[in-house]
Length: 196
Image (tube, rainbow, N blue to C red; front, side):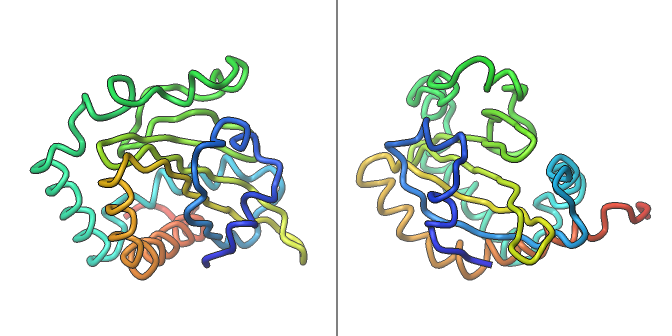
């Protein structure tokens, strides 16, 4: 479910200190029924194990395939356009006690880990269009229980980046995030179901 930006910016997340030049673009919540205060690592593990791109809806997979194809054709994702050559990693802004909580080696997908704490984690990516951060946080709900919150923070790369972010906004909200919600919530719900 989409949330107001203030649901992210109004919380005392560690990421705020390192992204003053980024814009909080989207904030989304994911239901995690039965989760307790210490279950954030279990939620992350369930998502990693059961909510990859192959678990997304057909339209979401199609959009990602188009995006990667365009990126390859236009050079958006060339290594020299990413972290290091074009953009300094946010890890350089962070203290070692924070960055030591996550292996900096990128896993599957385009994001590189920044840190992982008991109630929040952050990952970053950079290409020719944007420097972005995916922030995940663990939030206690007013009626009890906990839920996962995702915030997407961006720093567009000039006019191209601003245009790109404006063009993909309807697809993020109508297709990508709803598909991600279904996959992530199913991964938590089915976390203990034996694999077939």
